Length: 87
Image 1: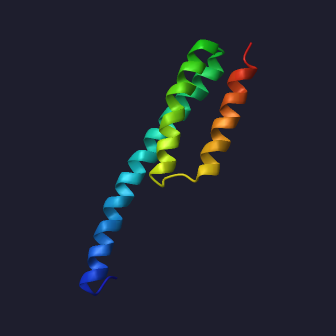
Image 2 (image 1 turned 120 degrees about the horizontal axis):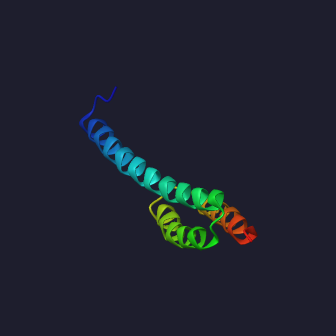
């Protein structure tokens, strides 16, 4: 448990940051899920549109420190390959 005033403040800041990051991560996952659902339905136009919407969200997660750059790049690469494979 935090004892000093500095560690108590740091604990409060960590809680706030955790809540913000959790919301950001959830938002990004929602965008990724929309791409997955569009791919599953087989609709190429919808999946391309969902992918274009998901890409800036994923990269914003990188700049905000929620995801590592390579993780976001890997996710985008795999999703775009699956979208491209649709007939």
